[in-house]
Image 1 (cartoon, helix red, strand yellow):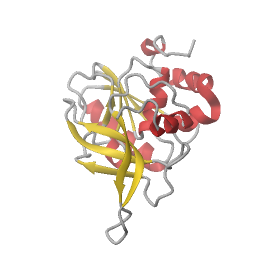
Image 2 (cartoon, one colour; image 1 turned 45 degrees about the horizontal axis):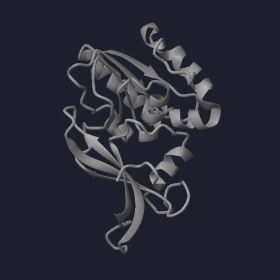
Image 3 (cartoon, rainbow, N blue to C red; image 1 turned 180 degrees about the horizontal axis):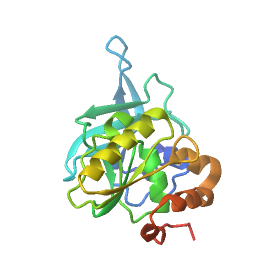
Length: 213
């Protein structure tokens, strides 16, 4: 079901994400199957479901973020995130691909940037391992890579920049102040995060940065 009015909305709001418009890639499942391993008993937990798409918009898999039964946090299970299906090369996509987009790792990371740049298409690769392998739309001319501030994230971003530049795409890596851009949103707030992001954008894109005014 749509996330509005569900525990999935509570979870997103707990991450500082209050705008639910344009989130067609996300759904809520109140009783999603979970098993920690093949020896463990089956359980059912509420879950935020994110559709993984190829560049043509075809669903190839899902990511399940298991949620606590009450409240607004992840479920207290061994692996609160699990992917299913063909994830390699694909991503959770928000907005229609065009000449410019942002690619990052996590859904919460790219939604934090989308809150500042609502008109810019974004995509979540779901992991550093998949970040440098995400297939780019043929229309793309300029790419921002939202790297997580750790060794795996920065190395993956550099590999993606090398590949996208070789494909003729103007590519810029942007970095958060803390571990990722959702961490920034939670710790320094919208305005300070917007100022940090604006300083890293190319001049032609700063004008479309939404400062929440």
